[in-house]
Length: 114
Image (cartoon, rainbow, N blue to C red; front, side, top):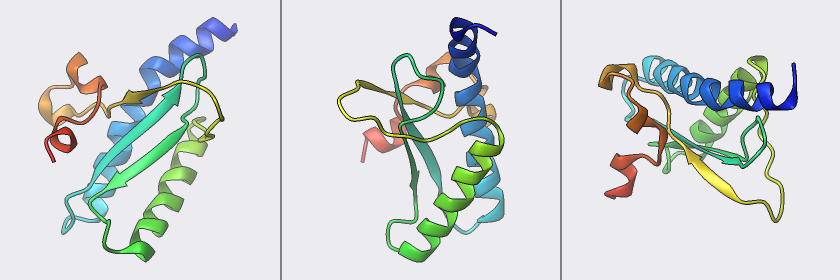
């Protein structure tokens, strides 16, 4: 597969996988109001950063969830590596409960309003 094909696959795969991850984290932690957000570098198939919102006050739980999320994404071929000096863009999880529309691929509206 060419680099262009890898990047095209990653552009469609990352929002879907982030949505699956968010759903999985919410299912395993129904008492928490969790949201997932990510940043990616232009021209790279992985992620630059992953954020889990809804556990800000519990460092131990946030660390445990981040370790799980990172391993889960790595198993699916999505690495997380911040590269200095590279431009970033938001990746929003694909949320099936909202119909999974293209508008699900920007920054989180819920978080933008906070």
